[in-house]
Length: 418
Image 1 (cartoon, one colour):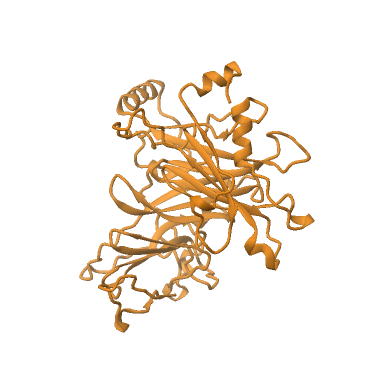
Image 2: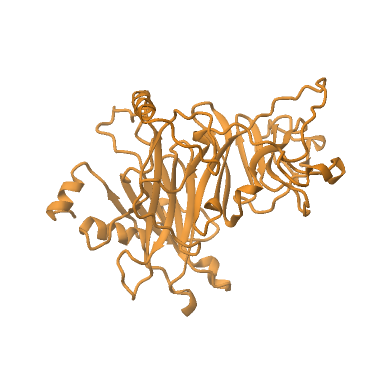
């Protein structure tokens, strides 16, 4: 893979010697699924979850291939081709659900790998997603160290006596695991977890700073109106780390009851004292029949789209982006592969999760955007003609805005909401 740089400033010039940059043995072709890129701290980062395009006969471990280089010195490339990802014995993966991204760790100001994988839990027929976070380390290895006598495969593998270096086995022992690096989709205490098919999941993303995932799904059970398309709703799940006081109380209670039996099928974490409170997966907004606020929210989230042909009347194309404060997505009719598709009208929806300020001089608190599981504070839609230009407020032909206030819940219960 080659990367070429284009200077956007007259004072910053890119010489012929500095471009293009060749990323050797960097595989992957789908941005957001097999490869991801990010610029942070004046570095260009790239990650791939594909080890090779060839079939490996002896392959025990899957690795990330990570690369970075300074923006002003693109020839100084640092890379790591053996950053642990997973062991193949953990079971198969539903590759269509795999999401790969590079995000910022706000505690350490470092770039981390965030990957969502849908797996068959413990070789069962039940699928669920887990959001994995991996830190990157580009420290230079000491070439003076003598080569270690590492095994070419797991100790209990039957083929280990027959393997030598010519077989090019891909294996690495599982490193120390930490609870912050794995966020399961469903809470163990969730009484009735509900999942959606891939075709009904129009948008999905995970925010590591908020430790929350957000899906935009088509819910056919919401309003149950056969004459309309399924309702677009947010599907949100989050967790947060509990304090030290709860941890000490929990440990003393557990010790009084005795030690739990060891389960080898579950991952063993180093930080066993870290406890998380994971909320059940929630859907938003409520059905439109709940109150006037819910009906208005549904009208914003589910705009009436123009029909290109009879086959695309109930299909929608959604493209969006999520950060720690808001979700922005665009809804357009399903693809018709016609010449008129570029001029099709679309709707841009903005969902803001920040709590409104009480006064102009009040600064937002540290917890104002700490969890996406909070009820959105405002929601807006702009219906506009979508072409090659950017949408500006002057082009909005039908702006709809809804704000959440502290008394909205009480007014909804009394039936006086507007």
